[in-house]
Image 1: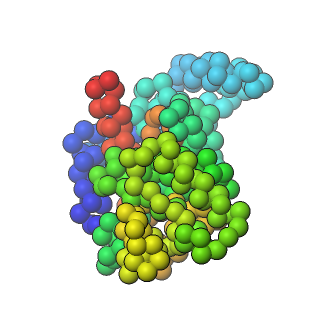
Image 2: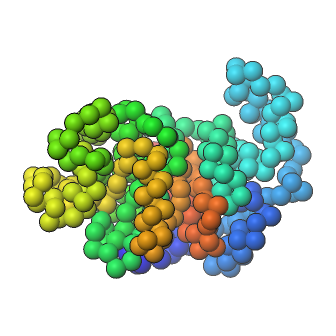
Amino acid sequence: MEKIISGLRERAKKDPKKIIFPEASDERIIKAVEYIKKENIAIPLLLTHDNLEPEKQEEFANIFYERKQVKGITLEEAREIMENPLYYAAMMVRVGYADGFVAGAVYTTSNVVRAALNCLAIDRSYGIVSSCFIMAVPNCSYGEGGLFVYADCGVIPYPTSDQLALVALSAARFARDVLDITPRVALLSFSTKGSAEGRWIDKVKEAVDIAKSKDDSVLIDGELQADSAIVSEVAKRKVADSEVAGRANVLIFPNLDAGNICYKLTERLANARAIGPIILGTVQPCSDLSRGCSVDDIVDCTAVTVIRAQKIQLSDEQS
């Protein structure tokens, strides 16, 4: 587990990317950026109201206006929006002046997600924006030696079956691309394979079927209770023929209540590292931060954002 987490920074160092930080007033961000620059994890840029370039603001405002005028926004309103460092940062990434942005130490998750939705391109292979956490649990034999991806813990309050399927597939791709592990995806519930009934369980079952129909190469199963998903002894008793049960390393929660509560409990009760929330579903990468984040959290979120930018560049070069 620790090797994989520390390896994120080393992978980022191999090809640092330009990452924007629009929260220059926060002391944790300042310290993290100093460390990131010193260690060559990324090429960081701190944004303040004072270093926004008027020419770029006007460029971004015009692009934003062109995209949003059908929804009634005026050019003057677009110009006002580009006074906000968060939206300016997102537009820098959208236009290609930067490779990613990291925010959320001061801004709320809803602020960061709205900036991503309004400014970045949406990955049409999924069509929705969601989020995930990397959870690293010490002294743990479950998952990938204590390593998990939790989704969605920050964006979609009550996902439909279709949305849940897309969250599962995007989290699986993240686990493969960023953590370099084979994803084994469990859609969680209070039921395991029909042990209970109800519309919430039906939603999870439908999501599994939809996900498999979209990509049958992903190892995915559900509905599974948490112990059935990660504990092999329990899985052998309840669902012995599953490739996922008892070995899951990507956990998909049925709603935002469950996801957010579980990641915070895991972080505090198990003394786990929680890296994220990482925003999924945009073409250009960005990472949110918990407002309770540490300097290490910021550094690791930045490393993840750099790795995702590296993957995008590699994919573009190969296409």
